[in-house]
Length: 229
Image (tube, rainbow, N blue to C red; front, side, top):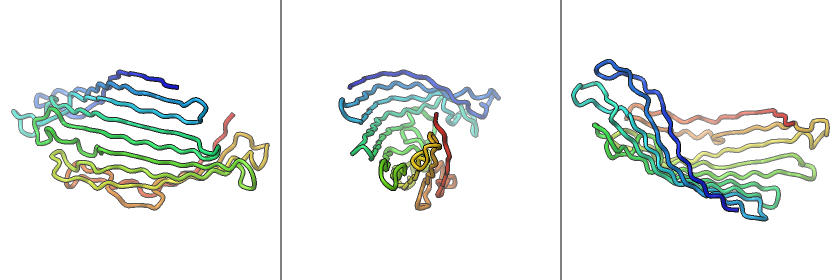
């Protein structure tokens, strides 16, 4: 049931702006190494996955010390972390999903006050837990009920890490109904309603400076009708 793996990937992202000489900025580049282990225990409807990664971003704009008000692309950010996820079906009707992520992010090259500090917004800890119960017999056959919580740790509020945003936890929920349970003619049809931030909690999603903060999404409800064949 064990499946170890390793991966290597590169990426790029365009950057707006120009240098003092008028040359357009190059895209930032990313390089990631990852190793992990997946496990599916024989005889159980369960799945576990753990991973370690090391990600480096280069060509990051930083202050140009020779030309005030301009930037050069000599900055670098490194992020290392650990992720874990577990999925399991309990008593045939109850599905559980749990996840945790730890991120150690640091600005490793910079001409500014952010050198050696955490990049803004990036939380050190993130976790989630979700449970979904499906009625398969009786009066409520075909009905599914789900609920869960998402936790996001505090994040740096500015490049110099002079303040941090508060951590927060949000509750999500879902209700679904398999229409074929009521009438075989509707085989494959399913209706579902999902609610994120169920209790409409007001929170700060992140800041890039003392006057550059944004609130997170308020309660969001989405209804879907789907068909599978």
